[in-house]
Image (cartoon, rainbow, N blue to C red; front, side):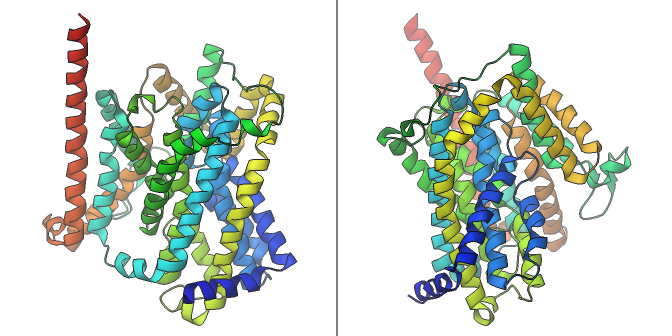
Length: 504
């Protein structure tokens, strides 16, 4: 009950007109920032950080965490409406939300994603409030071997994302691994494939996803002369408020995504991107109709959206209790805490508990505000898109160019975006899956770094992965994922053969 009393104390500190206005504004700003391709949580928090100078500690931290949560809500807007993910975790949202948009169910997709995001965020906050010290005490035992195997498990889900296209998925995965090796090596500092000075730091991942999904979709639609089905004009509530059937279909995936997102969010270095890919693979594995994924499947939309938002409070757990940032956004939050004179770590909740609980209470309030504002603004999003539909390609290209340029204020990322835009167009035209490519680009460098650290920790012996109980457990789970995927493919081919024979 101490947690509840501390939370009530936090609400007592932030329930002032000034703080409420800050939290509400932070949610809206975060939503806009998350919707813009190329920005996302890290950029949103960094942009707001100067505004916190001179603010009380609790108010400043509520502003930053509100923006953080808001960007997770906002990433789904452009993903669903124009297939341009605002950040990496929104990629999965685009895979299912955009097909719903093309079918005239864009408002419904926005409604389902808003409710799932709220439940995911609420579950993550409950874990943050009640279980942070306990979970953090176990998370401290994770080292490079465990992190490497977690990344390898993520790469193993390529088998699940591939469907019937295992050969194509393997090919694009290898391409993703190759792209991830550009730039200086994190461990040794060795420069690889940097035939231009701009490549020394590697290829910016956000420029890749802007090109692959934003420009690639524009090029494909221009060739096919695709016209979006925006449904009937108007502001009818039933268009974007999910009914019993939709909520029933989304309920279980939302709960699974909430749990998975919180747990993965706690792991430093994993974050919402890894969590959403893992959850999407899980939902596809559990679905009775996996062939409908990629065509507007509600479970494939609701689960990752809950995962996405649950990862935000999850990533705050190691930040608050251990001083370890779990994602890029929390890395900036770590700097903000230090800037306010706080010392993140095991003693933070003891020495500065009033500020920490006020921040958590502000995050709860921001989650409520974001649900209300995102649901009520759905008609505005859809009708705004309807108004600019004739010039939609120009709008998307402009957003992509601005987003890519803002990454480093250099035209180099615009060229990177254009290259991967052409690649995205060719992949879609020739039916190559983009999920495995993105997964490889995200996880390959992390897996490489953790593997080399593990080998150094084991003094050159790979036996370190078997000697540690947690890493051995993760290794067994990874092997089971691969084996079950292969067996599933074999069973599916046998069923298809039997069906073909029966048909004859």
